[in-house]
Picture 1 (cartoon, rainbow, N blue to C red):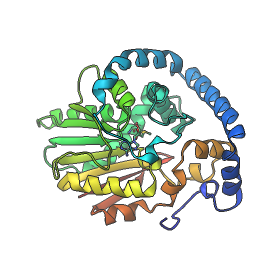
Picture 2: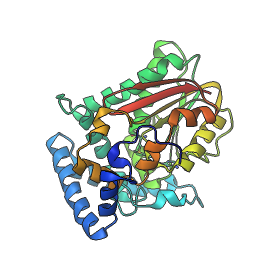
Picture 3: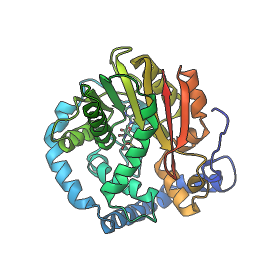
Length: 319
Ligand SMILES: C[S@@+](CC[C@H](N)C(=O)[O-])C[C@H]1O[C@@H](n2cnc3c(N)ncnc32)[C@H](O)[C@@H]1O
């Protein structure tokens, strides 16, 4: 592993609190009831905050199920690291429950960023995504023809990006770009298609972000939102290498994820830290990776690193 950059104390499993948390999580008998309680709490809190968690889960699953076969690339088998337990789902991202709850979980995450604000879920989501788009805007030059959102899940990031890029193109009298959403979960892509009822996104593509089969130098912008904390370090390096291959010279990458240096993460209460660590198998890998250095090694330059909100760091850079 690369040297520790700013690993929060609770995420460092080699010592102290992190070590204790690691040992507790390893005990299945403790983990399962913990997950159950945590899930109930998350759903109750979300519904109290205006996210119709269970109703939406039923609606999305019902509408998406018929689309799942046509959303899968025949013969594609996901890498082993992707098939592990994630977010308290035993089958990780490859199951209906994860796919039909991803929209609600993403809105709940956005609300948690500004606990003091009186945002609706849609307002919080918009504030979160606007800050990401604003960070990459200064690096965009000329018309954008082709854009990909890697790790698009059910399309929350993809649709926000597409709306913003279309508005930007219309305001400047430029053609609208073709946007592709790419993910490894056919269930999530099926839900994304349901959510994109207007067909704004050109393609929902089932592929690994590190092996997209898209043409080299064919993209003007790549978005990588909240994906790297779900990857072991080796996979992050492979995804960055693929992004560098896909972008034309001068093309831009925008990456956003948890900010290891943020005071919110550094001071996370032990109970929340235990939960986070037990549901995010690669979080320690992520915190230990020097991301700006990894980007430079992959061939990116002009890195602009900033805190886009109290929890997250956005990095915009050029190929
Ligand atoms: C937390 S979600 C992020 C969703 C979305 N980008 C957003 O900002 O709302 C992470 C997504 O990355 C996807 N993912 C993880 N590893 C991947 C890989 N190697 N290739 C493609 N997608 C991957 C997961 O399936 C999941 O949908």
